[in-house]
Structure formats: structure tokens, C-alpha cells
Image (tube, rainbow, N blue to C red):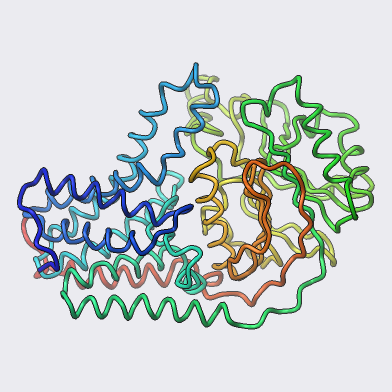
Length: 495
């Protein structure tokens, strides 16, 4: 049973499913219209739950996902427009393939729920869709961008992520959308109660007193180097001087931080580089984003330069972007067939670092968990044996354009701060650079497209959250229990 009287024409239903997906995407940053996204998810759930067959349910869910990802991930065309004459023709194909590729997860959820008895299909779709969203964060290296639960970033319910993470937020959201479909007005009341409870917890958590801050001043350096000119050899010196001048300006901070790959030279092949960086710090250490190499292997790295020009810590990005930073199976193809063109070990792309780690910067600066670029979208990449005092993300969001990509990336870093209960410092090449407290609030920022620096006072960490200790396990148990109940033999039907 559904709240709405739905049209019988399959073509009309498919169009409505695609439109519902488009509206759902307005809940993602920068719009954040969760109050539009949630009703659109209700409509999509109703369409899928009332499908005549499992195949039709899969098709409706697929179209809904395609609409959602086509709008939410429209920034995916931006990298192809950096050199539009050479790569511009690929942009529409990339968007279509990405939208429908990720929508396959939603289609699988629709097919599974479509095999249930009619009374179970709405809740079944909520469960399988949440499971599919969790799975796409892990399978094939994972890509948990624009998850359904992300619509709450910036709103009170986002604080629930400290308990159950983004997958738990997604499951609660899909259930809130399914209850009115399954139970009509009684379900609508239950849905309102669920969202109200999420909001109430968030309001309570945000109202808690703040711990005493450590008294550290950090400098966020944002050079704003356009991607089309970032690696121009003729501009390398001026880009480097800009970083040095921003670091050396004004009162001395306790630590200066540069963005991902902001240094246009190689770490191990640039005599005098560390001395220039250290001099700009005027007695304070400087964190730089730089490439380093050993033979024909190269890494996308973060390095900490001490005031005496010593390299005191390094971190190599370990969760690389497929095709953007390396070619999947490229090293294997070289080992098996001698094909060099895709092998990171032969200098074609980056090599992956050893994994997440916490850097100890001493008793004053404390322990920091470094993240490079889109490592911040993976909650599992923040699981370490040692708890950090704060999180540092350096990134180059010039690849993501100026509309939704950079703001969605920022929104996901805010969720990481909530999940871990740790302040997060974000330094981006073109913006948005930001200081985020342990409850995910943006306390200071350098806007998109602005060159400059900002000195910020690091907030204090909170006690370890349930999610930081347990990860996805509680949500997995809940999903397993729901699936066990829904897909018991008597709840199934033939496709």
C-alpha cells in the first residue's frame, strides 16, 4: 500500500523515478535541501514498492539512482575541461557512465526488494538500499560520495553519525522514507518521530559545553593555483614564492600548513627546498603537500619540515583515485606481460602508501591523523590503533570545479569530524580551506577561489565516539537482522 495514487504507465513511472532522483540530489551540498530530498525518497520508495515485478522494481530504482548521481556528481565533468580541446569530448560519457554505474547498486536493491511479498517491499527497499550504499563505499576501492545520509550534513540529525556513522544515517533516512509508504498515516507519524529523535539528539549534542582548547594557532595557506596552470614550469617559481610569502607574513603561528601537491618540485630532487620552506616558517614547523620519488616510483605525500630544515615526518597517500592517480591492475599487467604504460612501479601514476597512520608532532602540536584529498570521504580510512588529537586534510579541489564538488567534499570532511569527535583542519589549494570543530561545525574558512592565509585556533578534541570505536559493525548487525527477517522464505515471492 502506498500513500500516493501512482500512475500505471511504466514509461511515466520511469520518468517519475528519474525526476525523484534529481530532486533527491538537492539534499547534497551546496544546496542542502533535505526537506526536498526526503519527500523525493518517499516518492521513489513508493514507485519501487508498487512495481509489478522485481525487474520493474530494479529498473525504477536504477533510474532513480541515475537521476540522483547525474546531478549530485555533475562535477565529474570538470577534470575533462581542464584541457578541453583534448579531453572535453569525454565529459558527457564520464557523467553518464558514472551516474548509471553507481545506480546499479540502487537497481540491485530494487530487484531484491521487488522479490518480497507486497507488504514488505517498502521496508525491504529501505534496507537493501542502505546496504547498497554501504557496499559502494567498499567495493572496487569504494566511492561513498553523495550517500543518502549526507543530506543531513549541517543539520541537527548529522550528529547521529557520532553513534552510527554515515551508513547508519543512511539507513535511518531510508527507513524514515519507507514508513509512510508501508503504513500510510501511521507510518508518517513514525517517520516524523524518527527524524525528530535524530534532530533531538543532534541538538542535545551540539549544546554540550566545549573542552578547553590546546592554545595552538595554525595557519591555513591557500595559494589558489588554477589547475590548468598549476604544473606550468614557467609559473612554478611564482607559485612557490606565493606559498613562502603567505607563510612568512604576519605574526608567527605554531604551525603552517600547505595544500596537497602545492610544492611544484620533487621532495628528493630539489636541493635547498627544505631550507627555503623552513626559513618561511620563522621558527615554526611547516606541513607541505609534495610529490616524492624513489627510482621510478612516486608518491603523493605530506611532509613536515622542522625549523632547522629537517624532515621530521612524512605520510604517503594510500587510498588512491582509480584512473586519476593510478590504473587498477597496472602493476600486475607489468609483472605478467611487461606492459609498462599503466604500471606505477615504472613511473606511470602514483604508488600507494602503507596505510593510515598517526604522526606525533611533539607534546605541543600533539598527534595528527593526516588525510590527502579524497581519503577524507572514506570513514574506514580514519581507523588507526592510536587515537589522534586532531585530523588534518590537505587537498587540491581545483579538479572539482566551482559549484557542487568542492562543497560536497567539505561536507564529507565535516562528517568525519563528527564521527571521530575530533577537530579537523582542512587546507585546500583553491578552497574551501576550513577549521572544523569536533562536532562538525565550520568555525573559520577561506572561501573558494581566494588566495591568502588564515590563522585559526585549534579546538579541543572530544572523548572517543561510539562510531570511532565500533565502526560499521552495529549497522551491519542491524542490516543483517532486517534482511534475515524480511527475506525469510515465507516473505519471498517469485519475480
